[in-house]
Length: 214
Image (tube, rainbow, N blue to C red; front, side, top):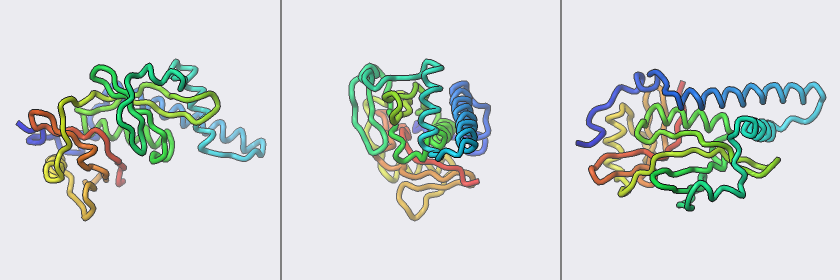
């Protein structure tokens, strides 16, 4: 049976009890946000120029090193064999896990990326992400690293299959292919390259852009 035959309504998924990994990611995101605010306030008091992106990068680096979540970029191949790369992620594969190293080009910052990942996890339980750490070189750009179960022996879903799947989840399609809305959420880039179908015909959204509408 296709996995889009029966689904919980969207509000019950979003408001359901959060699993431990989502709670963990929320705590990390909130703590980085809190430290950024403190750092920004200190710089403003000293009348130094404030670069919010740079503050977030340095705060996240220090937090990662403090919590044992730092991955020196020289060790990035320890994650696995290099996989396909896109505009946003470089990937590394080991066993049945794919690691995605996000360059933050589309995310709008670390906090916004965490919000998107957590929202993805609420909606698409079968392809939920886990936070693995921050990769980078000291005092330079850093890259959040997330892991996800690898969907093996799969092919890209068709647009018609995707639209049926999203309708089963309670979304309406828009005039833009791959963009859907519900009362609470807008999701786009739900295209064949980001939605896989396994040998049983089940669909898996492995990547998408999401935001809350309110």
